[in-house]
Length: 137
Image 1: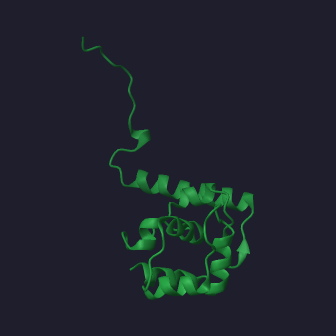
Image 2: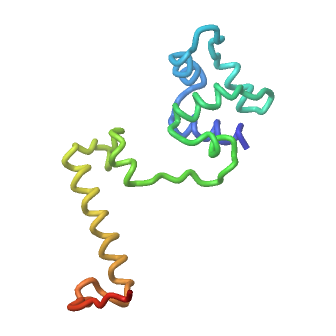
Image 3: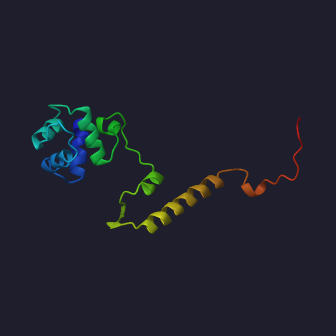
């Protein structure tokens, strides 16, 4: 599963093996060997397996979980609220969202779900009025 996911992510981001190797090498720790395009090719073919550290760097680079990358989960989930609050650049139709855009969209989505959840309730917040409460003890 890992080789297919890695290939899918790399091609989906439209980057070469050389580019990916160079990006991973930006995160080199002292004593680590640099990554090469040949090494990434071996990972994608399943001829070799990356170390835990390399899998972690790949997951960070592609912004996915390690579980998704190695095939433990079939769908990568993203919490939309965390995405809006993360500070990561978000584009819509090729245009980056400003901070104000992000805030407005977040508020709209939040309001949508609050109204949706409220409409599924048999008792509305406005329907409950407590005028008197007796003590039980």
